[in-house]
Structure formats: C-alpha cells, structure tokens
Image 1 (tube, helix red, strand yellow):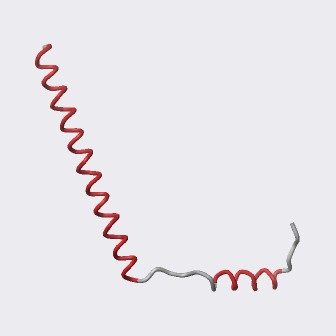
Image 2: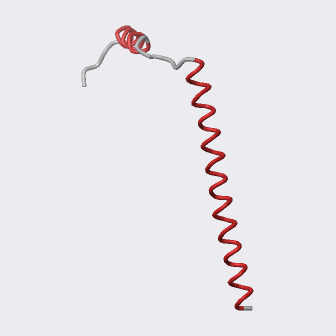
Image 3: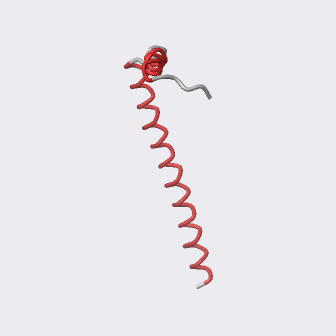
Length: 65
C-alpha cells in the first residue's frame, strides 16, 4: 500500500467528505417515526406472545395441579 504525505491525505479526506449526501429534515423525521412505530409493533407482538404463553402455562398447571 502506497504511503501518502499528510497534506495529500487531508486533500483526499476533504474530497471524500464533499461526496457525502446528508438526509433532509423530512427524511430524518420520517425514519424516526418509522423506528418508533416498528418498536411499538414489536413490543405489542412480544406482549401478546408473552400473554399467550402465560395463559397456556396457567391453564396447563391448573389442570395438572
């Protein structure tokens, strides 16, 4: 790998940094809302699964005991 001097390195860094495209405010807000929606849906899913498992085990243990 070829070594570059610090000046060339900084030029390359500035050149690459100029290629960055930042998301718009609308895109950031939309993706933030989507993350919260998906987190809520995931929490709801696991709550329902937990409720079903707990109910099933309670019924099963009542039958046995």
